[in-house]
Length: 252
Image 1 (tube, rainbow, N blue to C red):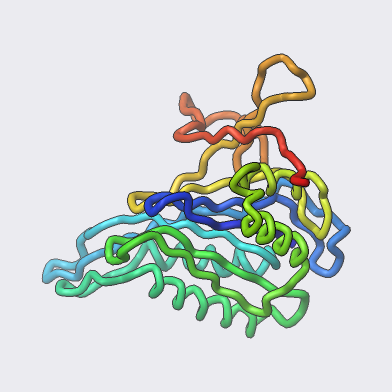
Image 2 (tube, rainbow, N blue to C red; image 1 turned 180 degrees about the vertical axis):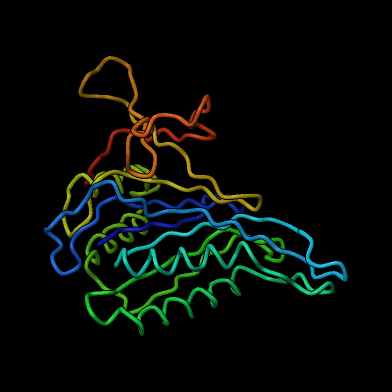
């Protein structure tokens, strides 16, 4: 299972937090990996149809996250990403909104479930977030098929922490980290983060102080894995943006 938390810090900043554990669909205690990416960025490329063919019009980023069946999610997300790179609009129309993409994603998810989703536990929720030029503000849509409640008690605890003011005092990221550290209900691994604004969607590195070593150093992770796990691409490095997360605290 997965716990995904999405909230607005301001009118121009939306946060998405998720754990990184993947379990066998029918056995939440059977951990397949603690390093599963669950947050992605998709590029929406719009093209104009002209008398001479097709010309590039604009490009925007949207964020995607998922909870539930990884098979169902990856089949849906990869198909959606391919379509979003190849959209052609009429010369007089450029009004595609995030809602329109969410409805298209819903059709892909439903078709995938019809084709192969019935053979296993395929409960899946996909979250689209961000903003396209047509949208008036930041949006988030949940596209769900057979919503499950495997992490329901953790979601209830998170909502209670927000309602009681504990989240404002302790920090939602710290509460999420504590839940992940517990390793219950199929949730575990490490924290992964996305930031969405009206301009773009970023996947920050997560920085955490090495409190066990007490030497002032920080660990760096990206999408649930150590940032340097795969090395570098030529002379480049990871690090467009990073967020520092304090050590997890268990709210009283």
